[in-house]
Length: 126
Ligand SMILES: N[C@@H](CCC(=O)N[C@@H](CS)C(=O)NCC(=O)O)C(=O)O
Image (cartoon, rainbow, N blue to C red; front, side, top):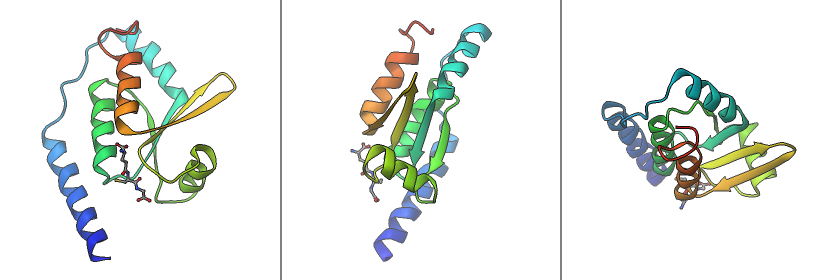
């Protein structure tokens, strides 16, 4: 209980500090941004707001200028959706819809690498 509160408190501190040190945002033309915005409608991030791995992922999302819907997985119905879809309660988890297929990607490093490859400076979107 005490450990959980401490972890949560530290998480809020990281979020607070991160607010004042925003990542440098990628620049795109309005047309390219519009196309990216359409693509990111198929993505959603399940997270715990104060989780450091989630914060790291949110910073990457911000750096890449992505509009990705986030869901707080401590709360229902997001928690149940994450468990049913991804198979475990672990965050961050990126839900990727592609045609009729849904993929649930865990691991912050994997998520960031995926987003960088798809939307980063050297992707077709830039
Ligand atoms: N290696 C993972 C670590 C993720 C992780 O440990 N997440 C914690 C929250 S900070 C978690 O989901 N724990 C499960 C729980 O608290 O129920 C990553 O980088 O994404």
